[in-house]
Image (cartoon, rainbow, N blue to C red; front, top):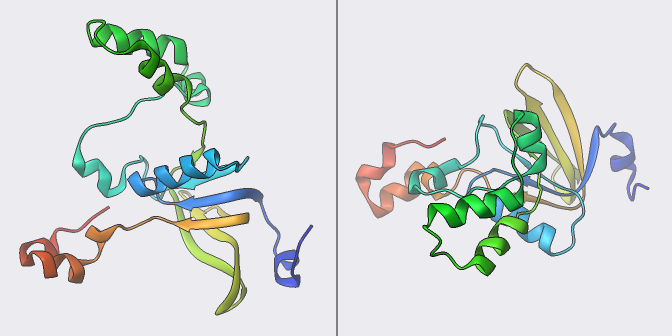
Length: 178
């Protein structure tokens, strides 16, 4: 069911409730929040071949046993095994309830890597509802992804804006970003 003629005119390759642009800290947080709020089908689009964006510069990490990932990699893993390994790595001092919360409740949200958003599609050229995005994947494949509820732009963080970072510290103006 399409609500506008513009939406119906596009040959959508896939439909999601929420599309998140950027797999940095803000984008991944937005994707998790969308799932927690009841969105059934959420996807994260990342232009790089790995997640993290500028947040990766902050250090640290977050691991999760995601079935699609460990099956694709051909390894044996599970949320239960992840919990056992996490507790063992902490010499048994971790709170088992919190560790199980961490390992059992990681949402399974797909991330499309090497996928650059080249256009945000709206009802009209300069106005109206956002309908979805046009993306280009590594190798030149173009896809049209429809969003029924929201497109969240969480790419390019503060550090991507040389002018704004230079206001805080002139030395920061030429560092670059992902």
